[in-house]
Length: 452
Ligand code: ATP
View 1 (cartoon, rainbow, N blue to C red):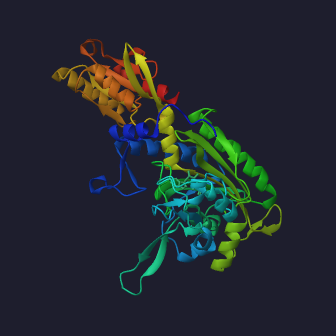
View 2 (tube, rainbow, N blue to C red):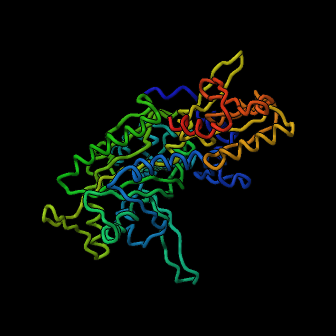
View 3 (cartoon, protein in one colour):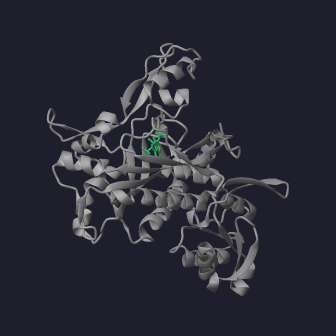
């Protein structure tokens, strides 16, 4: 068992995230809903910045991937074709003594859903709730979240909230080929909500019932599948390391009893959460499972004719799938730091600058009208380009600390000298170094710094 990160406990992370306006329990005033969270003012900014960084890297910077935004509710047959109605299930086990319900592979702590292995493991594992060893047999529990459409009783149609975003990509494969200029190999990427009736939502944002995914499906000739799989593995790891460095993330290969029903090969990128290394992203070689199944169930031929090869085939799919919420949690955890400054503890979120929710804070030294007026003008010059905050309450030291705690890279102080020399003091978050910058040059200065 790897040592989990000692930086910050889960409890401390969750309460910090709430205190600083990042994440709240959903429906908190009604007592909350298990497995659901709301993102506050800074949390929604951070989430958007993570999504933008992913989209830029996976779609905008490439010539071979296009974007999509498909509906959450698709035709129910989609989920039959995908195998979800039949096989999208986790092993569930009940404690007869205290009636608590668990996911069997998580209680036993093995990376397998093999029934015999689970039963054997349960023999040696006591209930985490009551400590007894009186388990039911593990039973399969389907994770699809059902809903119904229509307004007439008796004619309502059972539908499903999507369990993964990628099915909307497969069902649009032919549309994208027919209406754009893409040619195999090419990818389709999508960001959106997914829903799973997780048996035990747990570990805060890590296992929720409603969450968000960023998925990219690359359609390739079967002969190219392995090469493309390896190149996406390297590409995605480099992207993650650019946020987390190389110690906090690692690959883990799925064992044969662990792989999803469609996967020919599967690697996770794991992050070292407060509870140890766990999956943040999955990279899968899905073979021809998806397009074959949708061809069969829809009756629409989804094979592809490759002009260069003069060959017709069902493309294979290489998938990369990262959970926004697990990425968010890792980003917040990784950024959190405490240090001693002049005998006091300074809490600072060392976000990569493009990910920081607030990029710049404009802070007039006092509430004197002439300073407020100039500071408001300075705010106006930068606020259109970046998420900027204006704050003139409390002492300047406390305001710096508040911005450090939400990870704002630059604080701009407008003081009495500014009225004379047309310059402001810019303080950098990590080094706390201060520089005097002309107001006329501030916009360019921040743009250069934030790019770096
Ligand atoms: P796990 O084994 O942890 O249940 P999974 O292998 O079922 O996850 P995938 O189906 O590969 O997950 O989904 C892709 C990504 O979606 C995961 O890497 C993860 O980041 C995210 N994800 C999956 N389930 C959840 C969930 N319940 N809450 C938050 N994020 C999730």
